[in-house]
Image (cartoon, rainbow, N blue to C red):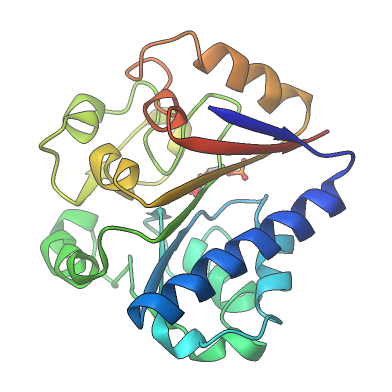
Amino acid sequence: MNLIEYPDRELLMLSLADAIASELSETVRREGHASFCVPGGTTPGPIFDTLSGVDLDWAKVSVFLNDERWVGEDSPRSNTRLLRERLLRGKALHAKLIPLFKPAPQPEDVLHELAEGIAPHLPITVLLLGMGADMHTASLFPGADRLAEAMAPDAPILMALRAEAAGEPRITLTAPHLAGAMRIHILITGAEKRAALDRAATLRPLDAPVAALLKDATVHWAA
Ligand SMILES: O=C1O[C@H](COP(=O)(O)O)[C@@H](O)[C@H](O)[C@H]1O
Protein backbone atom coordinates (compact mmCIF):
# COMPACT_ATOMS: atom_id res chain seq x y z
CA MET A 1 0.00 0.00 0.00
CA ASN A 2 1.19 3.46 -0.88
CA LEU A 3 -0.06 6.09 1.63
CA ILE A 4 -0.09 9.81 0.84
CA GLU A 5 -0.77 12.14 3.78
CA TYR A 6 -1.95 15.65 2.89
CA PRO A 7 -1.68 18.75 5.11
CA ASP A 8 -5.46 19.35 4.80
CA ARG A 9 -8.60 18.03 3.14
CA GLU A 10 -8.81 20.79 0.53
CA LEU A 11 -5.37 19.97 -0.82
CA LEU A 12 -6.19 16.25 -0.76
CA MET A 13 -9.38 16.72 -2.80
CA LEU A 14 -7.74 19.03 -5.37
CA SER A 15 -4.61 16.89 -5.79
CA LEU A 16 -6.51 13.64 -6.10
CA ALA A 17 -9.00 15.14 -8.60
CA ASP A 18 -6.03 16.36 -10.64
CA ALA A 19 -4.34 12.92 -10.60
CA ILE A 20 -7.58 11.18 -11.62
CA ALA A 21 -8.20 13.66 -14.45
CA SER A 22 -4.68 13.01 -15.82
CA GLU A 23 -5.12 9.23 -15.62
CA LEU A 24 -8.48 9.37 -17.41
CA SER A 25 -7.36 11.74 -20.15
CA GLU A 26 -4.16 9.80 -20.81
CA THR A 27 -6.20 6.60 -21.25
CA VAL A 28 -8.76 8.33 -23.48
CA ARG A 29 -5.92 9.69 -25.62
CA ARG A 30 -4.24 6.26 -25.84
CA GLU A 31 -7.26 3.93 -26.08
CA GLY A 32 -10.16 6.13 -27.16
CA HIS A 33 -12.20 5.48 -23.98
CA ALA A 34 -11.85 5.05 -20.21
CA SER A 35 -13.94 3.88 -17.27
CA PHE A 36 -14.18 5.59 -13.90
CA CYS A 37 -15.73 3.70 -10.96
CA VAL A 38 -16.63 5.88 -7.98
CA PRO A 39 -17.87 5.64 -4.40
CA GLY A 40 -20.95 7.23 -2.90
CA GLY A 41 -21.33 8.31 0.70
CA THR A 42 -20.32 11.56 2.32
CA THR A 43 -16.62 11.89 1.43
CA PRO A 44 -16.08 12.19 -2.37
CA GLY A 45 -18.36 15.21 -3.13
CA PRO A 46 -15.53 17.81 -3.33
CA ILE A 47 -13.55 15.62 -5.75
CA PHE A 48 -16.64 15.31 -7.95
CA ASP A 49 -17.13 19.10 -7.84
CA THR A 50 -13.58 19.66 -9.11
CA LEU A 51 -13.73 16.94 -11.75
CA SER A 52 -17.02 18.26 -13.15
CA GLY A 53 -15.14 21.43 -14.16
CA VAL A 54 -12.19 19.66 -15.80
CA ASP A 55 -11.62 19.81 -19.56
CA LEU A 56 -11.59 16.19 -20.64
CA ASP A 57 -13.32 14.32 -23.45
CA TRP A 58 -15.99 13.18 -20.99
CA ALA A 59 -18.18 11.67 -23.73
CA LYS A 60 -15.52 8.94 -23.95
CA VAL A 61 -15.61 8.21 -20.20
CA SER A 62 -18.02 5.67 -18.68
CA VAL A 63 -18.85 6.35 -15.05
CA PHE A 64 -20.34 3.85 -12.63
CA LEU A 65 -20.63 3.45 -8.89
CA ASN A 66 -18.69 1.01 -6.70
CA ASP A 67 -22.01 0.20 -5.03
CA GLU A 68 -25.56 1.42 -4.54
CA ARG A 69 -28.03 1.49 -1.68
CA TRP A 70 -31.37 0.00 -2.76
CA VAL A 71 -33.28 3.29 -2.65
CA GLY A 72 -34.70 5.48 -5.41
CA GLU A 73 -33.03 8.67 -6.57
CA ASP A 74 -35.55 10.71 -4.58
CA SER A 75 -33.79 9.48 -1.41
CA PRO A 76 -30.89 11.53 -0.01
CA ARG A 77 -29.15 8.17 0.55
CA SER A 78 -29.02 7.41 -3.18
CA ASN A 79 -25.43 7.27 -4.42
CA THR A 80 -26.71 7.78 -7.99
CA ARG A 81 -28.29 11.03 -6.87
CA LEU A 82 -24.93 12.19 -5.48
CA LEU A 83 -23.29 11.39 -8.81
CA ARG A 84 -25.85 13.34 -10.79
CA GLU A 85 -25.70 16.33 -8.43
CA ARG A 86 -21.93 16.57 -7.99
CA LEU A 87 -20.12 14.85 -10.91
CA LEU A 88 -22.35 14.51 -13.97
CA ARG A 89 -22.80 18.21 -14.63
CA GLY A 90 -20.80 21.07 -16.13
CA LYS A 91 -18.04 19.74 -18.36
CA ALA A 92 -18.71 16.16 -17.18
CA LEU A 93 -22.39 16.28 -18.17
CA HIS A 94 -21.73 14.10 -21.22
CA ALA A 95 -19.93 11.29 -19.40
CA LYS A 96 -21.82 8.02 -19.85
CA LEU A 97 -23.52 6.88 -16.63
CA ILE A 98 -23.76 3.10 -16.40
CA PRO A 99 -26.56 2.48 -13.89
CA LEU A 100 -26.26 0.43 -10.72
CA PHE A 101 -29.93 0.92 -9.86
CA LYS A 102 -33.26 0.24 -11.55
CA PRO A 103 -36.60 0.55 -9.79
CA ALA A 104 -37.38 -2.99 -8.58
CA PRO A 105 -38.44 -4.35 -5.18
CA GLN A 106 -35.14 -6.21 -4.65
CA PRO A 107 -31.68 -5.82 -6.21
CA GLU A 108 -31.73 -9.52 -7.21
CA ASP A 109 -34.61 -8.74 -9.62
CA VAL A 110 -32.33 -6.68 -11.91
CA LEU A 111 -28.84 -7.85 -10.95
CA HIS A 112 -28.18 -9.73 -14.17
CA GLU A 113 -29.29 -6.82 -16.36
CA LEU A 114 -27.17 -4.30 -14.42
CA ALA A 115 -24.10 -6.58 -14.57
CA GLU A 116 -24.49 -6.86 -18.36
CA GLY A 117 -24.29 -3.07 -18.52
CA ILE A 118 -21.05 -2.97 -16.52
CA ALA A 119 -19.25 -5.90 -18.22
CA PRO A 120 -18.14 -4.03 -21.41
CA HIS A 121 -16.46 -1.37 -19.23
CA LEU A 122 -14.14 -3.74 -17.36
CA PRO A 123 -11.36 -3.71 -16.39
CA ILE A 124 -11.89 -0.39 -14.65
CA THR A 125 -9.41 2.29 -15.77
CA VAL A 126 -9.54 4.36 -12.58
CA LEU A 127 -11.13 3.09 -9.38
CA LEU A 128 -11.85 5.52 -6.56
CA LEU A 129 -12.98 3.85 -3.35
CA GLY A 130 -14.17 5.16 -0.01
CA MET A 131 -13.99 3.31 3.29
CA GLY A 132 -16.19 3.26 6.37
CA ALA A 133 -14.77 3.30 9.88
CA ASP A 134 -15.93 -0.36 10.08
CA MET A 135 -13.43 -1.13 7.24
CA HIS A 136 -16.10 -1.73 4.59
CA THR A 137 -15.42 -0.53 1.08
CA ALA A 138 -17.97 -0.40 -1.74
CA SER A 139 -20.79 -2.41 -0.05
CA LEU A 140 -18.44 -5.17 1.12
CA PHE A 141 -19.39 -4.95 4.80
CA PRO A 142 -17.80 -7.07 7.55
CA GLY A 143 -20.47 -9.58 8.57
CA ALA A 144 -22.56 -9.17 5.36
CA ASP A 145 -24.65 -12.21 4.51
CA ARG A 146 -22.77 -13.20 1.31
CA LEU A 147 -19.41 -11.56 1.95
CA ALA A 148 -17.33 -14.72 1.40
CA GLU A 149 -18.88 -15.21 -2.07
CA ALA A 150 -18.30 -11.54 -2.95
CA MET A 151 -14.62 -11.77 -1.95
CA ALA A 152 -13.94 -15.03 -3.82
CA PRO A 153 -11.75 -14.95 -6.97
CA ASP A 154 -14.62 -16.32 -9.10
CA ALA A 155 -17.26 -13.87 -7.81
CA PRO A 156 -19.67 -12.47 -10.43
CA ILE A 157 -19.32 -8.80 -11.40
CA LEU A 158 -22.18 -7.67 -9.15
CA MET A 159 -23.81 -9.09 -6.06
CA ALA A 160 -26.63 -8.09 -3.75
CA LEU A 161 -25.55 -8.04 -0.09
CA ARG A 162 -27.31 -7.39 3.18
CA ALA A 163 -25.66 -6.35 6.43
CA GLU A 164 -27.01 -4.87 9.63
CA ALA A 165 -24.65 -1.88 9.39
CA ALA A 166 -25.65 -1.22 5.77
CA GLY A 167 -29.27 -0.28 6.40
CA GLU A 168 -30.93 -1.00 3.06
CA PRO A 169 -30.06 -3.93 0.79
CA ARG A 170 -27.01 -3.13 -1.30
CA ILE A 171 -25.68 -3.90 -4.75
CA THR A 172 -21.92 -3.92 -5.11
CA LEU A 173 -19.09 -4.70 -7.48
CA THR A 174 -17.30 -7.70 -6.02
CA ALA A 175 -13.71 -7.79 -4.77
CA PRO A 176 -12.01 -9.44 -7.81
CA HIS A 177 -13.59 -7.00 -10.27
CA LEU A 178 -12.64 -4.01 -8.12
CA ALA A 179 -9.12 -5.38 -7.63
CA GLY A 180 -8.72 -5.79 -11.40
CA ALA A 181 -8.72 -2.00 -11.90
CA MET A 182 -5.68 -0.44 -13.62
CA ARG A 183 -5.36 2.23 -10.91
CA ILE A 184 -6.83 2.15 -7.43
CA HIS A 185 -7.21 5.18 -5.16
CA ILE A 186 -8.72 4.99 -1.69
CA LEU A 187 -9.97 8.25 -0.19
CA ILE A 188 -10.20 8.58 3.59
CA THR A 189 -10.40 11.50 6.00
CA GLY A 190 -10.23 11.86 9.77
CA ALA A 191 -8.47 10.12 12.63
CA GLU A 192 -11.05 7.35 13.04
CA LYS A 193 -10.72 6.12 9.46
CA ARG A 194 -6.93 6.40 9.61
CA ALA A 195 -6.89 4.11 12.67
CA ALA A 196 -9.29 1.74 10.88
CA LEU A 197 -7.00 1.64 7.83
CA ASP A 198 -3.96 0.77 9.98
CA ARG A 199 -5.99 -1.97 11.64
CA ALA A 200 -7.32 -3.31 8.32
CA ALA A 201 -3.75 -3.75 7.08
CA THR A 202 -3.25 -6.37 9.83
CA LEU A 203 -6.52 -8.28 9.28
CA ARG A 204 -7.94 -10.84 6.84
CA PRO A 205 -10.21 -9.46 4.07
CA LEU A 206 -13.18 -11.35 5.52
CA ASP A 207 -12.81 -9.32 8.73
CA ALA A 208 -11.73 -6.09 7.02
CA PRO A 209 -12.92 -6.13 3.38
CA VAL A 210 -10.86 -3.06 2.36
CA ALA A 211 -7.75 -5.19 3.03
CA ALA A 212 -8.43 -7.05 -0.25
CA LEU A 213 -7.76 -3.84 -2.19
CA LEU A 214 -4.80 -2.40 -0.27
CA LYS A 215 -1.91 -4.15 -1.99
CA ASP A 216 -2.09 -2.21 -5.26
CA ALA A 217 -3.83 0.89 -3.94
CA THR A 218 -2.72 4.41 -3.20
CA VAL A 219 -4.45 5.61 -0.04
CA HIS A 220 -5.03 9.37 0.20
CA TRP A 221 -5.58 10.72 3.72
CA ALA A 222 -5.96 14.04 5.47
CA ALA A 223 -7.08 14.75 9.02
O1 LIG B 1 -22.26 3.26 2.32
C1 LIG B 1 -21.24 3.64 1.77
O2 LIG B 1 -20.15 3.94 2.52
C2 LIG B 1 -18.83 4.11 1.98
C3 LIG B 1 -18.13 5.14 2.87
O3 LIG B 1 -18.95 6.28 2.93
P1 LIG B 1 -18.55 7.62 3.73
O4 LIG B 1 -19.87 8.33 3.95
O5 LIG B 1 -17.93 7.19 5.04
O6 LIG B 1 -17.61 8.38 2.87
C4 LIG B 1 -18.86 4.52 0.52
O7 LIG B 1 -17.56 4.45 0.00
C5 LIG B 1 -19.83 3.65 -0.24
O8 LIG B 1 -19.80 3.94 -1.63
C6 LIG B 1 -21.21 3.90 0.31
O9 LIG B 1 -22.24 3.20 -0.37
